[in-house]
Image (cartoon, rainbow, N blue to C red; front, side, top):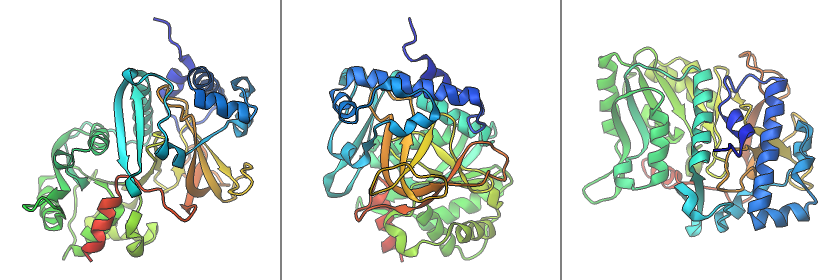
Length: 374
């Protein structure tokens, strides 16, 4: 069977995606053009958008041309379901809960799902996060057996497939009254147990929960060598208790005996789906299958490195939905200096949220729960 998306297939499976080369950059542009052509042919919404912006996929010849690629706002994806293929082609649908009953639905066909999984494989492999050693997990998220939330369950499986699971404990569980409860004592007991087993531990989840856990610990617990803390989702509604990333890493290293270079934050959103993660120097690297543009919030002009604006996220993998380019509500900038870790990809810095209303995902209820614990 003919491969309809050769460039997209190749770029999503590229080795060492954090090492940029001219050849890889050229392939990325080809993949974006390939995906833009497909969505233009399949989606009336994209046809209208491209016509309005006087854009055609043939305009994409170099990286510099990406500034002309029209984007879809994340808020539009909360109100409208945008598909480029029939629903029958979908093999996975993830739903994130939002405020005021608004939800974002992210759909994947089989090829798109395989591509985004391959992207994650390459990123974790180059970061040295893939292990064959049995690993104990402390998941600072809802227990998926009770949450019945496909998005949470899928995310957990993704995090745990890079190191074989020996055991796991979920911080959020339903109590006898069927109410969600932060099982902080159970988390501490689990960490004590893990500390004596000698196997690596991976603590994954929401930073505010992990912070509350370390505050509640009466004494440090030294976790085995090779352990990691992998955070994501931001502090959400727990902004009032937020501490700096530097303080956060220092606190965790002192309380859990994990080197700061093994404490990594991740960035991403359902509407974009492509992954980003901090390196050992705690800078967010942009894999070669992604690009980030920074837009002036008023003029929408692209801004140079170092200037703060709205982040526009580009990734050419999804044929089910036309989310090739997504304009986020996040503020940030592209760093002006190369990262001291030695990786050649661009890096970016998050500054905060744009607008008056935060774009909240499925972690919001969990973040609100942490408020009640203090």
